[in-house]
Length: 274
Image 1 (cartoon, one colour):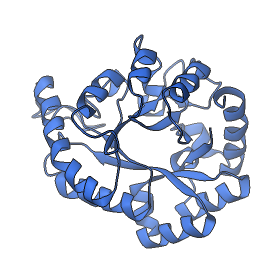
Image 2 (cartoon, helix red, strand yellow):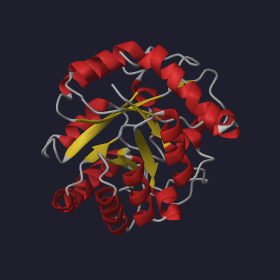
Image 3 (cartoon, rainbow, N blue to C red):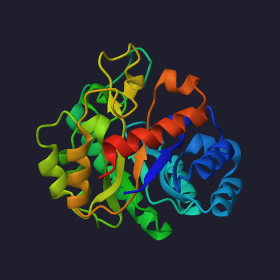
Image 4 (cartoon, helix red, strand yellow):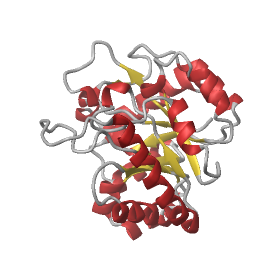
């Protein structure tokens, strides 16, 4: 299993710097974020990736289907994923309508089943467009603490049920250790996801959780997750893609990105790689 660097693990780097860092450290794959690609320029990013000989393990992100007027942005995300030849476009599906990350509650809906139905409908609309562009969509279930504002999909079982009406080559799922480690059904569901796993993302779950729960991700070995069973399970399910290290952590973001990438390689070899 090959290591991929998700760009936000070394967030201080621009796309150009992250690509150069991957080359220096012998990392052959990278996960990109749309806002950073936009800052670099889509054509320029594609050229940098091609010149470096890297592959793009994922583009993050599309989705937020429960917010108004997302269709145009999601089509743009598909276009960008196609231009970068990304292995998948990660979809974070959105929380309760009217609930925004970091914003106070006002004028929102508490109807969780309706929010999930809205996601299913928006996905049905997006799939034909992505199919025409040759882009695989990847549904990412998020830890339940993000259900209100980021993702009404909290388990792999839910994500698989949402993906099931669609061709596995067109709609897959993301297995992210941070979001799924707690689920007592997760290994049964990884087995059920054979042919559907579009991305395997890894980082640790820190304890205690920081005040900003978005930054509760840690370097592998610094938290509570046992990675070996996850890697064994995704491989047994037939996954042949990269293992993408995606860490949101204030201390790592403040450190020298070269040191962070060197540590990432060492911890990946010790904890994640089979």
